Length: 158
Image 1: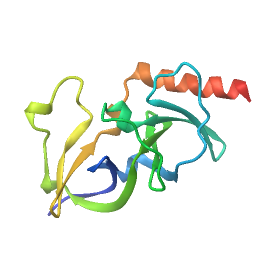
Image 2 (image 1 turned 120 degrees about the horizontal axis):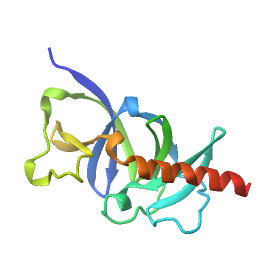
Image 3 (image 1 turned 30 degrees about the vertical axis):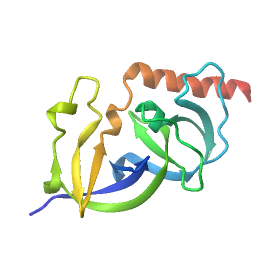
Image 4 (image 1 turned 90 degrees about the vertical axis):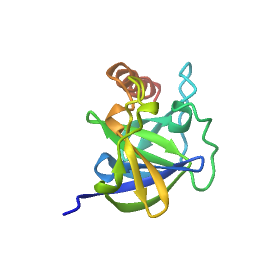
């Protein structure tokens, strides 16, 4: 019996990526982001969402693939990492699909390194390759603590 997972598919440039739907709280249209001075360029700031202050990261920039340009399709994926909610800005969120895990291959050794453990594997869906992302590996504990500190800075400004 084949094992499947539900995955949110999103685009960065023209490449499709996937995240297990269990790791996503919501998918939001781009909204007003409160800028925080002296933050790295991939940290876009924070948003107020349903009573919470959530830091927003430009995933394209974080992965050194350029900067996300704001369009009608730009989305913020609200993900949960170690019980913290973080907004991940992407070019577009396209689908929710069932992925057959038997069609997923491990990351080729050529692209594996100690610093590149965010890729869970490469999934095949119809004629498309989807890079499956391990959300929990996007940030280390020091980076998560930094993102937490942004929420405190913003709340002290209001």
